[in-house]
Length: 170
Ligand code: FEO
Picture 1 (cartoon, rainbow, N blue to C red):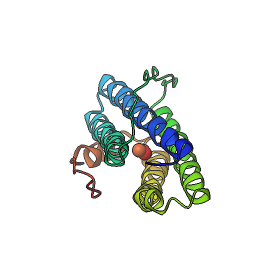
Picture 2 (picture 1 turned 135 degrees about the horizontal axis):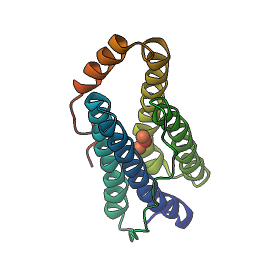
Picture 3 (picture 1 turned 180 degrees about the horizontal axis):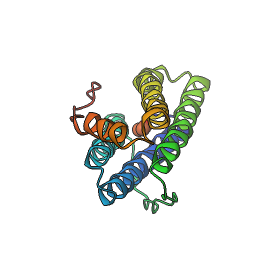
């Protein structure tokens, strides 16, 4: 059994990751409507990755004999008007998620819950990658997004992204 507070935060994280999936699905829909299928593909895959993250938290709780309770997933509420909006909202969101992971880690650390800390190590690294990817997308859009050829090239790059299952297996 895990410490009650740690278990509660891990359970909440399932909801946060599912919200992330929902948010990125919303971004994917936005780009598809703009005719940018590559950006839409990138966020569709990102949504799948977020669902995977949720499943990892769920499985970890189950492996530890903890009760899992699912809450309602909020409606994505980011205002999307320009092509840059999802990219900036995505970066901010990943910074927020990093804070959530760090918060669970701090609680596990305080409880000397080394098992949960080890489990979370993968997410700590993953958040570095998530923030870097989001930041790179903003920079590339700033550099190339105002030119139609540049935008086409970016869209082609994002169209090439393929889904791969998470390297963490529980
Ligand atoms: Fe599950 Fe994008 O962090």
